Length: 427
Image 1 (cartoon, rainbow, N blue to C red):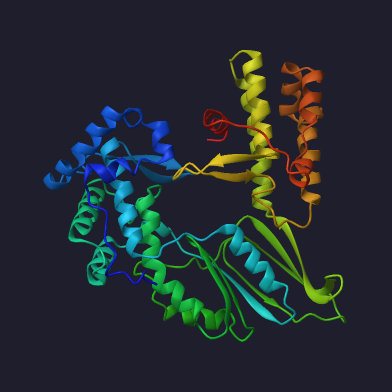
Image 2 (cartoon, helix red, strand yellow):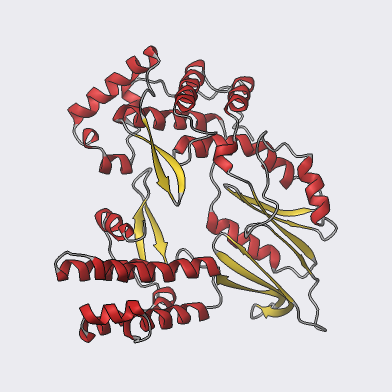
């Protein structure tokens, strides 16, 4: 859906508006943004860079994020230009990113109904890298929503990506999220409006569709073949994000369940119901929600890496121990994160990341695993830990509980510097 938008005006590419586009995360990382004089110099340079066509020259740096090539901007000028450019695109296109919590809540609500339905999990291959930049420019021009200047700045960026040999949209840059979302608007609308589609949600490349039972795997594939999926994008045919489940109508006569993962959760959908409400009771299908096994394994690996980092560190004992404690707190408790865009607070952590979990047995298992690493004689890591950390300190660490952090919403205070140091162990 467009924002109805021929009358929407863009912010001009002038110093006054560049100044307003300093984000919280930029303020932390870029010294030039902290002083009025240096920020003024940066903002005054950008219009000249644009008119000379050099606004993106040598500004893109390749990094690695979660094992994949990603990209970041390296100059203060390009960062502010990028922020204003994204803002102008978003003024014309309704490209709000999906809210994970809302999606999970709505999905659970649909699955609790007693009727039969099908669940389809889909995943798009190399999502950002697969977009065709010529197709993007063609769409933006034909939509006639963006100003000529905005189109030119995007064109110049794409030319720089050509020179840097970057495929599709650069993973890691905010503009890639914005442009990919606007390119997917027609596809999202097409699927969600199909007869028989009860629920549709896409989180970047990760898609879930709940349909009436008559839409089976084969008929969905046919539907996708006729959908307005942007050119060059393809679906994975198999893998851990591809799934199809037939959920039967609820019944008192038999108990049957199906499980699948989505957005870090595991859902176990049963054919039996329980009664909800006190005065006016209604029957609702039982849906058990757990943390997905992949996420549990990730937490276990981070516990191990945190302890391994403590053992191998050459820093003073107190410094090493404090950092180990912070890493364990980060994994087992909750904390306030600052929104990188506007400086507002976002709650995150073991409860807030998995607030819809109904089965806490895994958290007990995490506690058992964590304590076995601290006290066991069996593993090499545990023996090495015993050699460099006395029983007194290990006992203190063992007081931390994942289950308690979840059930009692235990909080810890962590600074931006703490977050950076904590994550060093897991890179």
